[in-house]
Amino acid sequence: MAGLVAAGCVFFPGLFVLSKQTLRHATGWSEGDATVVAARLVSSAQAVLACSAACIIISSCRDIVEDRHWLTDAYILFATPYFAYDIYAMFLCHWHKLQVKGHEEGGARSTGAVVAGFLRREMLMVLHHIFMVTFCFPASVLWRQGKGDYFQGLLFLAELSTPSVSLAKVLIQYKKQHTLLHKLNGAVVLLSFFGCRVLLFPYLYFAYSRYASIPVYAVPLVAPWQCNLGAALLWPLQLHWFTLICRRALRQTGPAGSSSPRRKGGPVDQR
Image 1 (tube, rainbow, N blue to C red):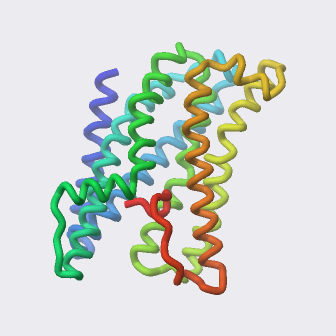
Image 2: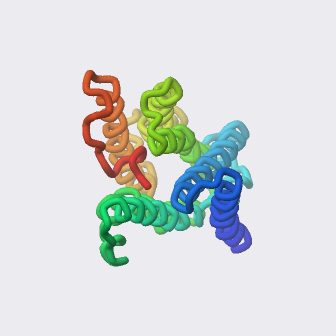
């Protein structure tokens, strides 16, 4: 167990540093540009790993409650440090953006002001990551007592939208909002986020209702409290972010185009 956690602690920050240095030397980008793109590359890499694990686990579980796959706990242990690393990566991206803005405006901010501004802007994402480490980790590894690997695999699929969201951020960073690639990627963001995040939690309850031959509305009465609490806290957050994504899409396709001010705090605006 400790070895997998340690591996995750080394892998994600190491991949970030390697990506940043490679981008700087290969493209001549500034420290800030390389940092922002490297962070998004690491997020995409984690998403690919999570979705790959999800496909293996889901396809191997015929009994959605009792069947087990070793990769379930292994990937949870390996990936948990990612959420702690990602908070730091998000802060670095925020710091570099402020440095560019401060240089342009001829001003500077104290470290405390930068941290406070970061927390105001990214509070939901930071709380989401903290919740993943402090609640979802013990719930997934200890409290579920070896049951429900199929459902855990489905939860890994929530990361399917991350690469397209990361690409959207890169395209926005380089002022490519009006390209065909950005429009096509926007459609992928909407579909993947809706399918793998918004519909995910209702499907978890629907799948168990079919397994147990009970109505969907009765599932919360028999499901472990950890599952109900996790869904009650995480699903509204996904709905909120999906609403922000839809609003951005409507602004970009409307007559005003992208001239409207950007809404902050959503998954497309983070970092």
